[in-house]
Amino acid sequence: MNKQKQMKILMDREKLSSTPTCPACGKNFSLGEIVVPACGEWGTAPKLVHEEDAIFDESSGRFIERKCYEGNLR
Ligand SMILES: [Zn+2]
Image 1 (cartoon, rainbow, N blue to C red):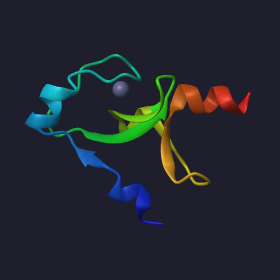
Image 2 (cartoon, rainbow, N blue to C red):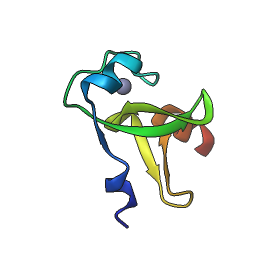
Image 3 (spheres, rainbow, N blue to C red):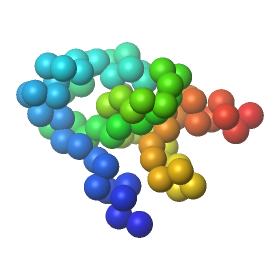
Image 4 (cartoon, rainbow, N blue to C red):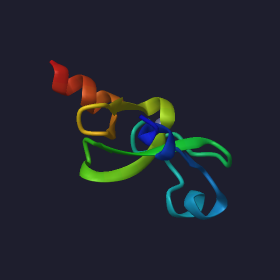
């Protein structure tokens, strides 16, 4: 139940330098933003994306990029 919360990450300087932009929306991250590791169009290896760019998939217990998730539903 709390897994979703545990996966949330606060964007700090170190993560910002290794992942400056969000692969889901293409915008830059900024310090203090909440990000989550999500799989998406890039494959199953999770990448950090904005929290609002991802949907938590209860069945697999992980975040999936919103576009990818909605694509799979169609
Ligand atoms: Zn984003």
